[in-house]
Length: 436
Image 1 (tube, rainbow, N blue to C red):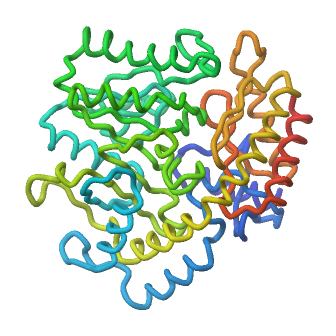
Image 2 (image 1 turned 90 degrees about the horizontal axis):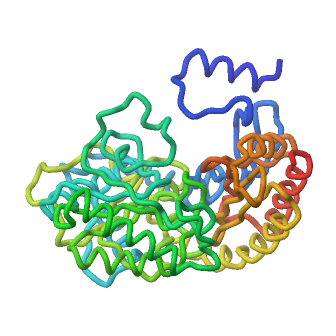
Image 3 (image 1 turned 180 degrees about the vertical axis):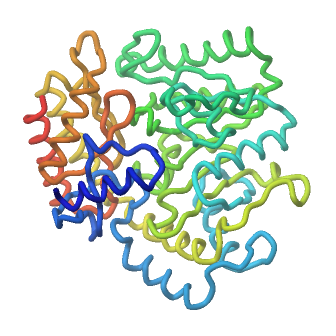
């Protein structure tokens, strides 16, 4: 038995069941170097997962991030950042306020994860508006606490045996150009698709389920991550903003997976020309080293009195110093990400034409989704084809992760070179040939 199989068996014995898939992705990682991962049997893999967009700066992290973290460890790691004050939190907050969309005063709440960032956003929206209800989108993922789980509508298993979660969330279809309830080709008719989604909110949710004046916020991902790396029509968020402003509803932008350079802009929403009232981020802000999440919001929405919300470790000194350096490096990498976008767009476009089971390809920057179907006309999802591709890719030394019902995501670290990107895309094509 390989070392990997031994560790997988030990994992099963001692660790809780979460989201591992030992049949399709039996990868036991021992170390990482740049964009490469090495398993316990010393096999090398090119990483097209970035550990779900956490290691955007590679493994174990960017050298400058590691240097800053080591230096900070010699000064201060943690010192009750919600009781005492420290300059590091303030410096990171100032940087986030500067780098997030919106020419208005902002404040920041620090947590330890994307779930915590979205949980804080829920509380901020409720407290500031005095309203109890929310809208979220089918296919969206916002976390697994009982508050954020209510917003999540990605896979039913995530809510299995968990009811009741937080009440008061209503779901609308996301404007998925490829797969939507109205069977509209959203690539050919984007405006029609956008209008149908807005009509659903106005004529179904507001008219029949709950009045608009009871809604505090609309949660969304600029590109749906767990839902399949779905890119909406470019005009969608401008129209959604108009609807929200008419009814005094806050826009809450979940950038946990798409933020920090993944799409070629610092934030995914920048592609759509909208400044949200609340923006959440986590994952890559950690530099792959130490957990951190942040909720950036209009200053006027701040908690009304001390003690309404807090936590222990969020935005501690070490995490804050890492976050500052991450923002600096990501900003310098944005032109590189935009340059590589064309390479991925061209190669994956050819893949779509060549393989009959590739139904759709979509993406921006280094955030790409490939959806597998049994037939291009019926668009019936082919889950087993997707799983075969994941397995064949791993055999050839490429790590990819599934998303949506029958899609994979191609999301390498932003530090990947053009040569490494071409190697990875070549391995992906080989996996498709073997699997399909």
